[in-house]
Image 1 (cartoon, rainbow, N blue to C red):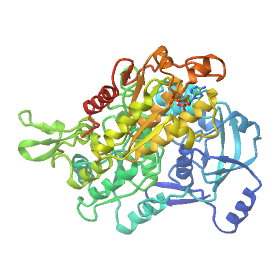
Image 2 (image 1 turned 135 degrees about the vertical axis):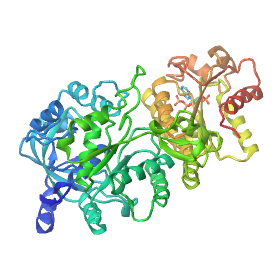
Image 3 (image 1 turned 180 degrees about the vertical axis):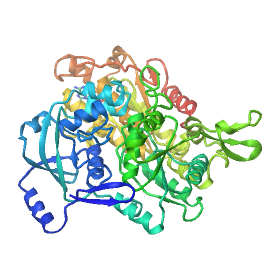
Image 4 (image 1 turned 180 degrees about the horizontal axis):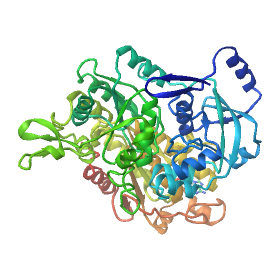
Length: 570
Ligand code: PPS
């Protein structure tokens, strides 16, 4: 490890090994036990290796972990609020003995670092969730990771970096702390305020960052997180395109942008402190801390996880130790009569304050409504409209489920024809029979095979939906759990409409178009849905259609009316 000591920013660790030693370590790594890091661990290791997490020199040891969780400090007394731990499953942990070296790899198998394991322990995760995030509610992304996704055992130890995780996007906008410090030095910047963000920036953000820079008489670092943010956030590609447009609005040579590969925890007060330490490592002297900084919103009971100013209070409390000053964020509002932005607390009573919330912005994008120029720049809005087209141009899946002979395929085919007639949308039909020929020809009708069949349909439908198309699916899909899995997968990328074709078994059996019910009754076909294999009724379908007494046209009409009412059709 090398250490760089600069006038501000303090000690910077660089864990990347160079020269002959690197070649030797790469050779050694071939014979070591390997661990493939998950997305969050990859973000963490990049921040460790490039010095963003200085003074850490590896994943926390047990003593440091306990000290961080309980006291917000490492065992040597340095302030550090968030546990940076390497969680592994029990089986892997059993193959590791203290003193072992293991090689940590990315998803493609590239060796990123060698870790010398000095500690191995089973953490009390509930305690960690309570003390670090103040909650065990799994609506909190970090508590959820901790309690539901992370491995049972933590490994601690120092790292020898072989190479940084690779990025292929926005390479010129990514900097290590040392690179950014060097850049500041080259430009002669000595007082720098960082703006942390995980959202697109609009005029209010530009005004507030310019004010912050003016207040401290310094320059500005726009420092967006492009590692992991809150699930459901605008993707980082879209955000970076927006940030690039915003950067053109700052007075020349006053502000730069750099992308931060941090995996946020949404940890409110502790996270704000962490953000400050990270920015110090990047050579900043100040950090803007807003209302509810890094807050994850509300818990499952509808209460906010943190108070609006808890983060500011926490940064204030440790102001002497962190080496970075806070610039408290004032909510900026547009004052109509003055045609300018002002901090909300400075606006005279009789003037009109305007603001557009995130929810309202999404509604306007959904419905292709006006987004006023006082709120955002047309170039930024154009990027957002491109990434978030109005609902009637977004992809969606109509997922029919029901017994054999219930009429799913008939309605699905008729719906397909309606879209083709209209001719403005790309549409794919994934009927049960079509899928069983083309995607799932080797599968039978055991529970395992049916679930595999349905997840394949869900995967294809999610890809179609993600790319703005319409997927119409019509398998029996008899089990609720797997339907739920598909719903969650597809809802992340577009619309999802489950249609239960609820025609009763007696009617389906009477129809017996393929003669399969008769065979099932005689025991010639085994495990037939509705006869000797269950059909679990959908718990909360968007629509239920019983085709016993209605025509095919009427059934399709019901689906089209629903889609129209929900804004899916132009
Ligand atoms: S599943 O359960 O969703 O994977 O089924 P799916 O892919 O939709 O396939 C259902 C069609 O296969 C025929 N078939 C059976 N259905 C149910 N149970 C058993 N054991 C079975 N064996 C064959 C049946 O014709 C179904 O077609 P549809 O179009 O639904 O009538």
